[in-house]
Image (tube, rainbow, N blue to C red):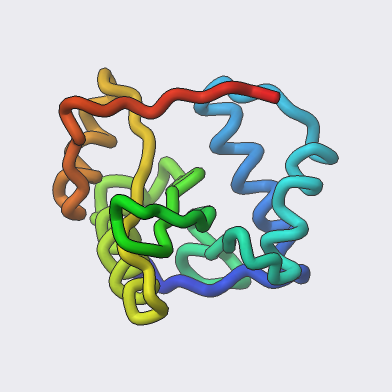
Length: 149
């Protein structure tokens, strides 16, 4: 099994909604499919603020990753946050998420990306292991804070 990445396009919307729904059910995120479509569609249509990638073969993806772009003076330019990453439960444990988290930043660095960030539940030992293996490190004196608008 491979973490081959395919940049999402509008024709992938239904497949992505299905994967996002599965991830949200696992994570306890409640929203309608219409809300998911509203959040995903612009990414697939090419807005400059982010992108969605299918993991695995586009006709039968095994996961997805959504990345959103920003700008950081501290990191010297373009940065990004991994908004969501998901691999189907049946294929977990094969290194697919790790491969994705290593390949995606390398590819984006060629386009000028200076840093990539993600958020993780400190109690999720499996996710911490995957993210550490892919080169992500906690910033001990920092934490992500959010304000919903």
